[in-house]
Length: 229
Image (cartoon, rainbow, N blue to C red):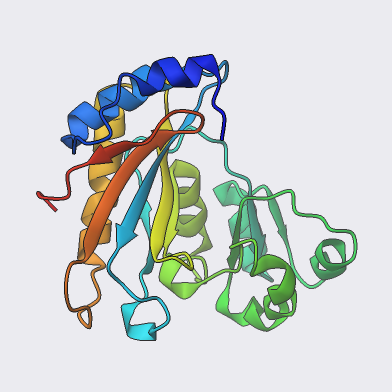
């Protein structure tokens, strides 16, 4: 894969053989984010879990203290008073059964997170084939299936992110933007790592965190030492 000049120059600043302390890694990621837009800073965590076993799955959510830097659009499936509550909480879209054909037939997906009250999951379940592959299906573990729609919407708007293992047992999550201060990124990174460490499956034998890489959207990966975690 051929990289552009900017990437190559940025990559020279990173020693691929070095495992950096989180603060150094964050400073490097900011320095190597040279694209013309405000790049997202991402964390990629390779785990020793085997996601094929249910008891080794990792899934949850954490509110980043400084948000993600991204405006998140929230869709809430609810009925009755909960619709009004969701609107008051700042949900971008609220509704019920009438939204199903819009998503299923018209391909409407102008939202980033879906929240549903438990009594609506029967309806939302019909969208499994559409929402599932996109990682948009509401889930109790992630706090997106709940009667407390006010808290769910507030948390998401404040910078709540979901984490889960992909097929290769890696967790990929954003922890902010390259324009954030190093302190803000560090606080977000720490909040995420605390949650990941707490989420360690009790059934796991062997090493839990194999590698951690910090990177910006277009920048080179910076390896972080897993020793302290």
